[in-house]
Image (cartoon, rainbow, N blue to C red; front, side, top):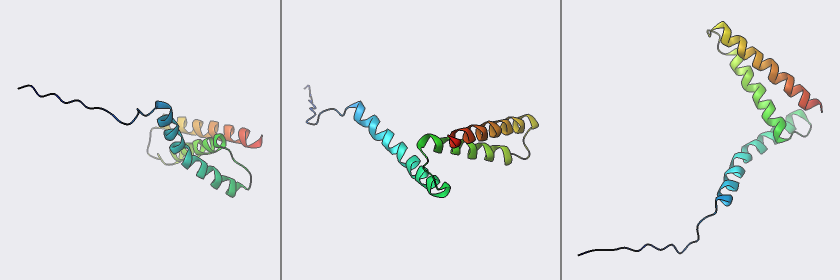
Length: 95
């Protein structure tokens, strides 16, 4: 005896565009909140791009300062990253 099962979907397929827009909104939400925080602290309007630059500089600082027992070459690379990140932050925030 052969058994067959037919599965039908009553709901239409969810479009990829709506899923990707939901994911983008979910990723943007913390950045917007952080941007508002930076705007409040710096007493000026900070956009998402400037927020990402500030995060880059903060991350570079952490990697430049905390690996105290790391190899000298790695510490030099992190210091160069920090210098570059601060320079970019300075340029973007003075505009």
